[in-house]
Length: 406
Image (cartoon, rainbow, N blue to C red; front, top):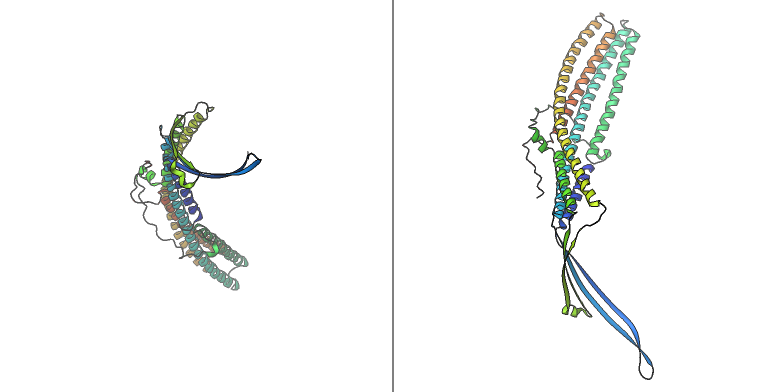
């Protein structure tokens, strides 16, 4: 949350929206400009002095101060609508930051549990490799005793090498997941270390998804979509008001003198009101109104799509976890049966009742199901993360979020 660069970018976008809201709010206040001028001139004049023409140097100074205040009377609510739209966008930006935080949390948790599943599967493969080596020693012993053929030894060696290859692939997968965690933490892989070993613990009970209206209120992306609809509606109102006349008041004061101490001896003030109205603009303002209405309609459809997507994601996550639990239960039963088959086939092989190929097939099935159970447990954790993400991470009571810009 502190160093992730994508989240920091979201905070900077929020800062931009805050500045735009402040800029829009400033248009509701009078604007005051001041000016200061100073000038000094020098010239020569020639005049007739009776006995000849003389030249005289003339110098003059002029200083002036002025101030002008302007204010637009919001006759049709155009300025207020613009300010409201900026405030709605600011609130939507806050919701975007919350959505980015939830996404970052979910991605980090998903990667962490994937790393835990890989660590558990790696431990299983290491144990399987030790078992394969013991089986290989047993087959070699029976080979020397004339009770097994060279093909049995080669098949077992192939199975052992396959375990070594799987172990190398799992180590590579673990490294990539650690790099992914480093990226999410906003640091380089060389500087990142895992705080604690990742483990797959027991999942808590399923949370109460609540009513659909509570979900819609809880999701920050849905709230952001709703706020942007409100902002588009206010921009449409501003575009409509822009077609009507504008009334602007101005107050101007000015003083000037030949020296600074004499500045305020004389001054001039004027108050004026100006009314401007569009006459011919080639249909530009009308086209802007139509564009704003279409943009508001688009955002309204996007809001509806966000609501439906939120509901679908929750239902998908609940259904996926329910099915994944059924799959995990089936795999665990298959694993228990595979263990019994392996024990029986191994005993039969020791007494020479079956060929080693039967033992190898049973061993492969046992190892495959053991790893499949671990992967299924990891997928179960990923499904739970997806559910928490769909629920916006909040399992408490949702609160209503209105659209009043104040």
